[in-house]
Image (cartoon, rainbow, N blue to C red; front, side, top):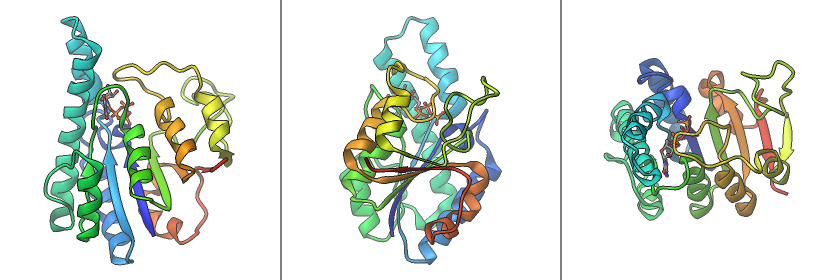
Length: 228
Ligand code: UTP
């Protein structure tokens, strides 16, 4: 299966880089490759990107500069995952979808961070899944699925087992896109998922080691987003 996987910065670098998590991700990706899957990867910036963006704001940096700072941090995280993957990975963070697809066709795992200002790596993941014609898009986040509201703030929040991409669009509608924002999937990414009509999973960190089985159809405790 051709699959695009986005590892949110919130799990990869919840404070600084999480070495154990990065190791686990590399192991899971190796397992996918050994089973013949075609894999494309995106990583987020996490807390370090937010810290840098906050610092830039103190100097009244423009949103575009804040975004560019965030993009650079995602690329540092991409370097870490590339280091953990060794020869299996394309040896530098990939900046364009074309180069990512070319690397995948050479049997390497491309690791992308951000691309251009104005969105997050969620949107990059949706664009890469669409341009590579991936069969499945997977997001790993620090929240283990899509909830009716933020479960960290609302004890009554309920997780969706399944939902349509249209329902997800309605759920995130109206959320502002700002540098360093923190929502489950950014609204631009959600629109792109709806447009590309790609089956999408939102999973928690604890499912990383089960990824190969989940691709084979094993149950998971996250949210499945179906086209529609
Ligand atoms: P992230 O994708 O990490 O955003 O990009 P996030 O919402 O903080 O996600 P998690 O929590 O890490 O998963 C960090 C910042 O980099 C800029 C944005 O400002 C974003 O908030 N960015 C990232 C871009 O401007 N363009 C991109 O393509 C990617």
